[in-house]
Length: 358
Ligand code: SF4
Ligand code: SF4
Image (tube, rainbow, N blue to C red; front, side, top):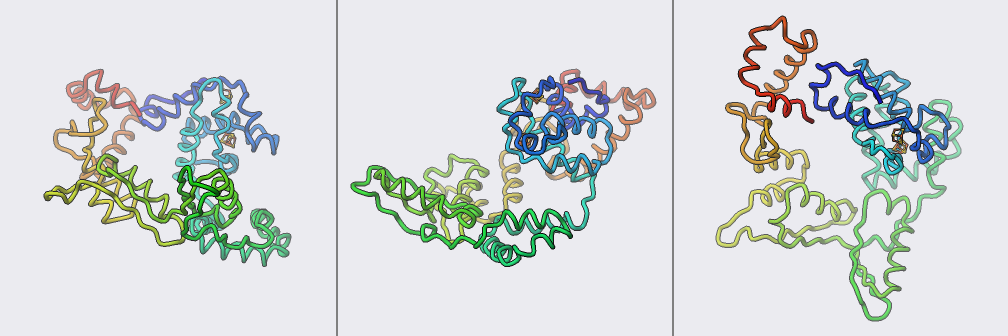
């Protein structure tokens, strides 16, 4: 697909990445046949190819995301079945993520939309709130057509809600399910957040099947990670989340060398001190190092002489905005000869190549 981004736009690594993805699309339309929203609605704008065109138009013209485009991007389920069909290897996943970030930046959703999103974000990952919401939906089900007059989405959600909320499954409590006959294997069942509330029969069936096949199934509320020193902060945080999302108290043991003969591991200390993923990401960056801007190292010592991306983040953001502003009105810096000279002195062609990489 031909794209028409300006050089100034391409200086933004996100746009550069979107440009590469867009250019890989050959408009063949193979993806439309496997897209559930296109198959259901029959509208090209609700197909992967249609969305790709809309994203291209929105990004190229740098316009605030129009409500019509927002509607079609919102309808994308992120099921990514289009990616498995695409013969051209279009990374739709990153493109639609970028479009969503752009929409959040440039489009103001209605108060009703924002309220609905906040409520869903709070309710869906919380089993207690989700159960209460299902009871509420069950009671309000007959009012569906009436609520549909306020917003069609309320009626649709009530229609989707199960008739009577499924009872909490006995399978979800911490216990060990013995294998039928001598146990050949052991498989831990890790509970998620929404599925045990909405479809408890899935875990019940899993336990039935495994135990019949001679597998012992402990319903895990405890996780032990051996040699935790060998894992990164992000991996460990993800792993412990597998037992941390259920409604029962859970424990994750990190078995390390830390503590022996006074040795400590700052990654493990950070994990123990907080469960906040954002804080852990910051600590991780501190410990791993920023890596280089003009080379390929993604960790270790920074190649910046004075600045630190972490310490001077605000300053870096301001400098970036100022740079975009200058290049936006004067792409070849003909009106800023002093600045052009300075940049020529500092940056080699190879450096420039790294600067524009995503
Ligand atoms: S299948 Fe791939 S190349 Fe073809 S239209 Fe869809 S995204 Fe583009
Ligand atoms: S990710 Fe979106 S565009 Fe791709 S198949 Fe799923 S719903 Fe369709």
